Length: 214
Length: 210
Image (cartoon, each protein chain N blue to C red):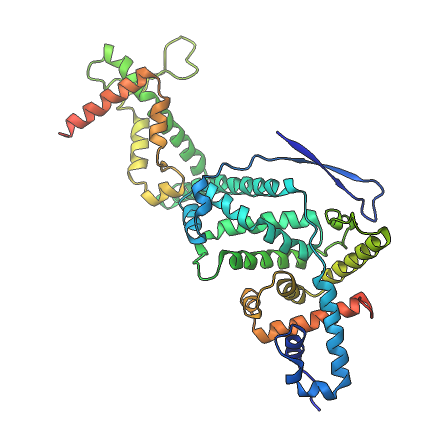
């Protein structure tokens, strides 16, 4: 089985670099015809017991779900665990998917619930510097890069400290680009409350990041 | 003087509403300052990307999820078994029931798997096929097989249990077969057993007048 190595920069509390071996897992064999199916047909195939149909759903949405989770917890390990949890819950509740909203919105709803539940029991760790390791910085001068990394870490830490609803609203609006109405549906609240949460989230972020955030 | 509401601020920050339409803004330095601050914070926070994991990570995540789903399925089958076993409680069985029922199921399975072979052997000395010797897998110390007969009481217990088994209960317990599984099972049979199966099927069909 193919393997690859992933280096992780040490966190502030650690001195040495970490080395993780990532096994290249064999991707489940997927019937090519499944890839052409729309969401409703894919869900129907899953309910018929086609495991590879669910693999296609995961393949289509894994990046956005991972990114959503990462925004909440601001670290790779937790985001990875949460992403798995989101898809597992989606699998369990697949019969409840009626196709009234898109599969992406439905998965977001599950994702937000999973993340909010996790956030309520676990204080997210502050952003590790490793977070920026895959951003192409070759053309950037070292001082610029350091400043940008520090600023990004500061913003992520600030977002991670926002109250749950404010954090969820800000993430869905700013990063997932959902409409106020969609966010209201996901969070079971009103459009007015969504706007109020965005407003208070931005105000709190300003306080948390200091008086001159830019 | 009424300052802008949170909703109005958000509409202005996101550009949903034009500044011209908020007359109060032109006359209120406090709201102007607040609006600029909110814009600056939004601009900074929106520029923060999620770091891209290793390209290998995505398949790794998929595999993790599919493994978890497979575990979930196997646990569901186990849960189905337990539900099926618990469903017998109303019929007077109590705490020892799960073990007993599992044992009965095991005997039923063993008998189902052994009968085609043994009836072939039994026919030579027992033309009517009612007396069916079945060797235990371990055999006994005398070298003789343990004999089960079609009128054996233990088989009657199995028959009694299975007759009243509701179809939904069997499905929940994972006892139903999947499409194609019979074909696979037949493919796996040795030629001798396949011939025996053919003979039994013909016999059954001719008895039903088919």
